[in-house]
Image 1 (spheres, rainbow, N blue to C red):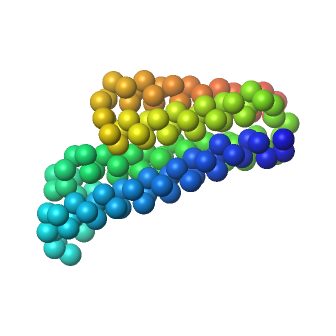
Image 2 (cartoon, one colour; image 1 turned 120 degrees about the vertical axis):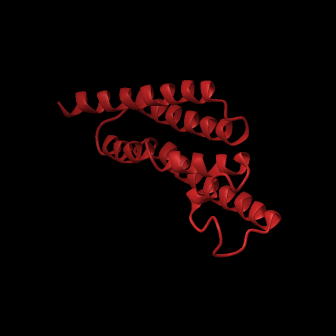
Amino acid sequence: MLTQILYPAATLIAWSLFMLVWMEFVRFQSIIRQKIPAGGPGTRGDSLEGILPDKVNWKAHNYNHLMEQPTIYYPLVIMISTLSYGVIDVKLAWTYTILRIIHSLWQSFVNTLQVRFILFIAYTIVLIIMVVRLLFVLA
């Protein structure tokens, strides 16, 4: 039970690396298909906006999102792991991770804002609950 809380965080790290590889694979294919010259437009990831198709850029947008809010989640999980935690904490951590993966898949394939926003609110609420629970343990 000592490491149970770390599994969802490790899973989200693995998912983030998967998204990185997927993003680069899809981008590389698109760059070759469009014959974009090396050193030409798109020398930075964000400069590929408007050059590569939106569906290609969606993976990059999601990868960027995975580098944002989870930077709060990872140290939070580490802090929780050093304290007394229970099944609820593990379930909350898995819920956060699963919602983030669903968000990634939705943004990568469909990308309608309304659903993404609902998922964002849902996993943010889970993160807030995790923080509040940690603060009560620390108090």
